[in-house]
Length: 198
Image (cartoon, rainbow, N blue to C red; front, side):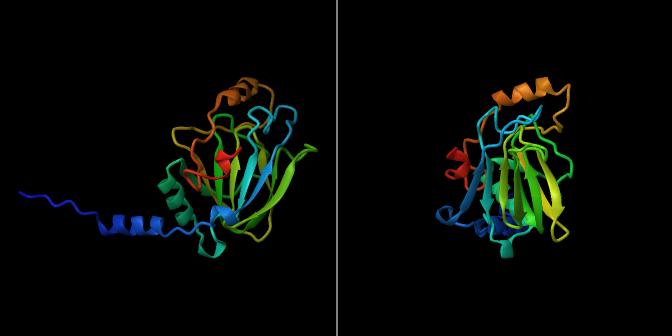
């Protein structure tokens, strides 16, 4: 018996989809970087000194959807997509993992750093943007401007994410942020990109 190994039509379509993902060229990408001071038990960028990164329209909005973002992140291989959802309206952060958010739909005002922090950052993000949120940086939804705001939440491969709120009893978790590894490849662009320049 002879076995012939050919990729299935579904695998071919998947490969084609990944190969045709159009990204804004790095030379044209608008990048916002923010260092955010700590606030009470919310460390923000103070521990690792890695900034919040916003890639404006990394994915051209007219061509973007959640499946395309997931396929692209998977093809780069740095982060694994884990959910599609909006952002919680309560300030929270992760102590065990950095987070990469691909905006799949809509437009929203998001707060980074904690809403009571004078050094907070409020940005309006929209479909096609990508946000790299370092571990320890608080984030929350302030306003879903158009309704239907959704993101693809992704985390470095092998990392399990937790939820922290800057409350007493989280000190040991916060301390561990210092030892988290940063990206060795950019989660969106691969071998070069903003995450490697910080």
